[in-house]
Image (cartoon, rainbow, N blue to C red; front, side):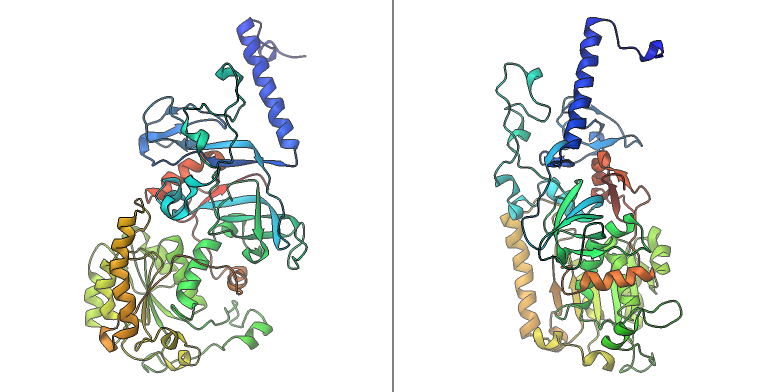
Length: 511
């Protein structure tokens, strides 16, 4: 028998409210059962975030109450307006069309986890619209209903004067981890029920219950890692891999990662990859390569330290913030310097025999390039690298050492709105530098390379997967993870403000 507190309300007003809630619950339950629909966290418009804009809101709500700080409740970051009726940037929508397999190499994944990368924050802020052209794409949202009153509008429809009504559907997130639901006719490596992870970059769409990816964007998730670790891996480690091992960039030799007993992970790998080596560190021709990672505590920087150390068999030095120095040392980097002081400049000025073959910049801006360019090695690569090295030939560099950046000459590129003026200004810096790679000899050679994308193809994600299975490399995950999808805005605030300590993982749905 129902207690008095469980009985339906008796007043006409409360009865109407009660019936409306019951109707909404039934509608959502019906949507959940529709195999053609799914839930997703949708970015409804561009907007910048401020601390005063952290609000508490429910899914599909268009109003909210601002809060003075981030709380542990279902917080979402909303508009750059202080209005109590401000429209939220993020909404959970339950009637998004589920992606379909339209290519023979497609893999449909029931998605459990995604992450927040800096590019997601820059896209949400509208800073990359000149590059992506998203706001000019065809609007895929429903138009406002032709009703006489707002109370008759469908749950996800918007007023005609609401800017969200004309904003194309935007689901952020480029990392995923989940279970294969279906595969295309040409997919041979995966089947329904397989646990997979990967990245759809440069496409988004992973803040949703289902993700459609190409087979080359996926890899089998090792049993030795968690779903959070799987989702936090692709963007960070594939970016670091390209900077370190790509023949036209870092061009480090790839060595088989050792198990705890000192043997290679498997015999097949041991036969196909170069053998590990024993070196005399005092012999310049026999020494291992030296790598300096700038921004070593970030997700890409931490991945670079681990990959260079474990797979590139390199000596790794690092620059990071003082609060993260112990963490970076635990990854195997030595020495580790605080970026806030000039200790690294003094140290390497005094230690001329410790020059770098690769300086990998994960922060960007030109200040590090001008300060550290002088510490690149002026001699040839060590003997064990010469056979595999093609970068000097491909790029016509007289010095094989190189300064590689995955950001560019603008610090945290994309954090401000990209304009034609900024592009022209950046080109003025880069063109002479790239020309210098080809034309200038010896010490005057620019030895500068930049890349802004990564790939999971050509065995990259598969190699990373083998290393993950040994747990010799692992992504750094922010302690607040995993956040529920309702708190995607809170995660964006953490990442955009530089408050995160590792990758922020979002729990899309229960496993």
